[in-house]
Figure 1: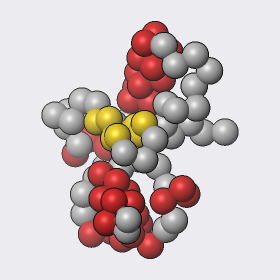
Figure 2: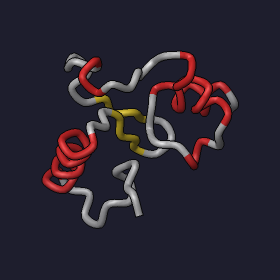
Figure 3: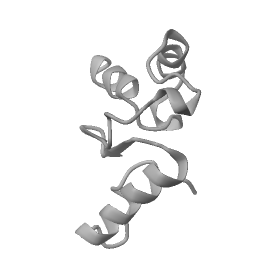
Length: 87
C-alpha cells in the first residue's frame, strides 16, 4: 500500500514522520504529503522542478485532480483546493 499521508503511521513520532517525508522526497520526488484532509505539507518547494520532466502546475495536472475522486489521487495543492471548494 502506498502511503500518501502521515496519518496512517504506526507511532506518529517525529522520527517516523521525518523518515516518511524524507523517503517520499528522495525516493519518488513527491514534495507534497497530507496530514488528514486539512493540512498539506510541501517539502523543498524551491528545488528545480524542470529536472523532473513533468510539469507540476499545468492545465493537464489540474484536470487530473479535478476529474478524479480525491481519495484516489496523491497529495497536491490542486487536490487540496478541490476538496475544500466542495465543502
